[in-house]
Length: 141
Length: 147
Image (tube, rainbow over all chains, first blue to last red):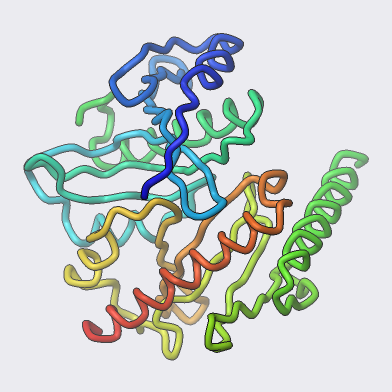
């Protein structure tokens, strides 16, 4: 049996305390995180937890690549070698597209400053990766 | 000069908290080495040992294990088969990363980062260690067939 906890209310209450733009989407919240002048990153917060025994955590991620073209092996290796501030890279083929995301699983015992820190860290790493893939582009995937 | 000192004290305290949280699991835990890496022996139901490591890792502490640890992957990066194997399954937690040594050899790690406060619960810490061990063992076997 898969146990899941819905933490939409808690996440929404904390997002309201930030100055970030966000909206509800089917699986949680889409959040726009400004990085620097003229650059931003869209993050997805999944508000149903993924549970393994006593671990309860939810996914915070940002897409950096979505295409019908498979990224090169050299690029995937360089992505795996990269030191991210937090979390790691997820890659796979979903709905006939190749997708690459930066992801971190955040414990449900989070507070507002942890959530904001994780959002900022993922946004910065995802933006850097996106720039490596498409120099000069913004949310091109 | 006071800021770097305060940072060092905070890191020392966090490492001590991590060390204590790991010891509460009942597993064998070594004292942090000079690089702040703690080694833990996680045993399965048959009492077989498996080595897992913990460290403060910038923003969030992490627990990791070496995958395919008997020898480094060598000087070549990962093949398409190994990359597909790594990402072939949607894992709830954690991530793989490639690490390049000073001698330019590649090795592969699986890591879970967590919130120190949440993992102060020994049950949660124990389950985190078990998850890392399970993925490490499973991938080690799968990659051994490909390398």
